[in-house]
Amino acid sequence: MQRVPKLGGMEKSFKFRVAPGHLIRRAQQMAVSIFMEETAGFDATPVQFAILHALIDAPGADQVTLAARVAFDAATFGSVIGRLEVKGWIRREPDLADGRRKRVWATPDGAKVALQMKRAASRAQQRMLAPLDAAERLQFRALLGKLVAGHEAERPR
Image 1 (tube, one colour):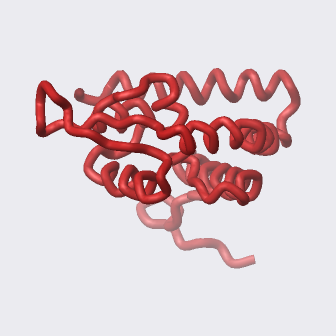
Image 2 (spheres, rainbow, N blue to C red; image 1 turned 30 degrees about the vertical axis):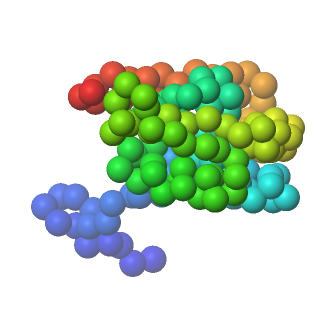
C-alpha cells in the first residue's frame, strides 16, 4: 500500500469523510431524498412543506419573518414563495401599514395539501432516523438541536 506524501508533518489530504460538515451535508442529502420519496405525490419540497406549516401556525406573516421562521435565505425566498403562489397554495398581499412588505397566507388548498402531507413527512422523519435505536434518536435530536441553537446564537441579527 502506497502512503500519502506528507507536507510539513501533515498528511496531504483532508479526511473529509469523517468531517462534521461533510457528514451533515450527506445527512441533508439523504433527508431530502427520503422526504421526496415519501411525499412524491404532492410535488412539494421540504422547504415548501415547512413554509405551509409555518403559515398555518402564523397566518399573514410577512415574508422576511416567514423566511427566518423556516431558516431560509431571505434573498432567494421570494422565488420559493412565487412557486407556491403559482400552485395556488399561498396568497400574498401588500402590508397595509408598510406597502414595501408582503404578507403571506396559506390558501385553503395550500393548507389542505400541507395537512395531507403530514403523515408522509412523519414517515420520512422515521426513515431518516431508522438506523438509530430509540435512545440514539433522542440523543441525536438533542445534540443536533444544541448544535443549531449554538450557531444561531452566534449569528448577528
